[in-house]
Amino acid sequence: MGRHEIEWDPFDPNDPGPCIKVIVSNSYDVIDGWNALGLDCPEPRHVTALIDTGASVSIISKTFANNCKLFQTGEGSELRTLAGPLGCVEHAGAISFPGTTLRPFDSLRIVAADFVRERSFSCLIGTDILRNWRITFDGRSKRVLIED
Amino acid sequence: MATSPLTDELKVFQKYRDEWVHSNPGKFVVIQDSVVAEGFFDTYSEALKAGIQKFGVGRGFLVKQVWKTEPVYFVS
Image 1 (cartoon, rainbow over the protein chains, first blue to last red):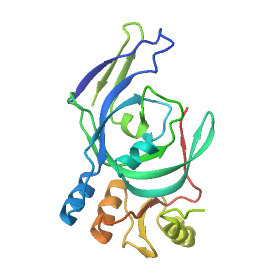
Image 2: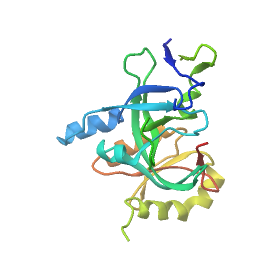
Image 3: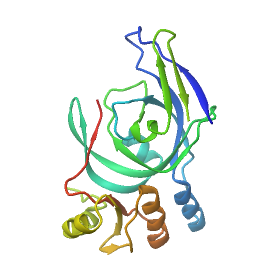
Image 4: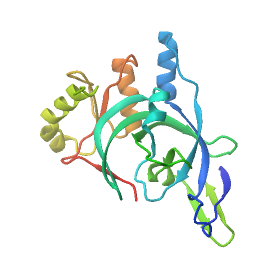
């Protein structure tokens, strides 16, 4: 069982929320296939992700998805946000959590959308991943505990 | 206007959607061009693997869950 604790200050209005470092890459099956074809595969990238209980799916920035050449498996889905609906693209990918013992996720549907003016994070960890974890938000001690 | 890479696949999905909604609601299908991979899959992950086996990874293919209406993702 993996366990990881992160800091989060709900009393600080500039704190974007509980964030965790993640590595996003193509699904391992896609990477194996590309290697077999002799195709270049971009290096996995480290990004900061917000743990977002309000997101029904994990989301990364479109720019990031394009730079990583994430394998596309969908088009035209609707992402409904407080700022209005957005069109989005779906990719197959893998997400892991460096420096932790949390289990990685492979062959995961990852939605790509524009992150407008957001500098603190470029990925949202949504309930597709969160449903596999036990998460304790402890506002008073300013910590979030994740167990899988 | 640029054509999205999976436009043809989405047309195929729309063509068979009603039929699939009755026979296999909630399952995943895999489509590339006008070719539908054999079978329906319980999870996205299974469908992806089947798609890679059938079509390879030279270019993308559509992995789509069979619902009567388009699912909407929420961020709040």
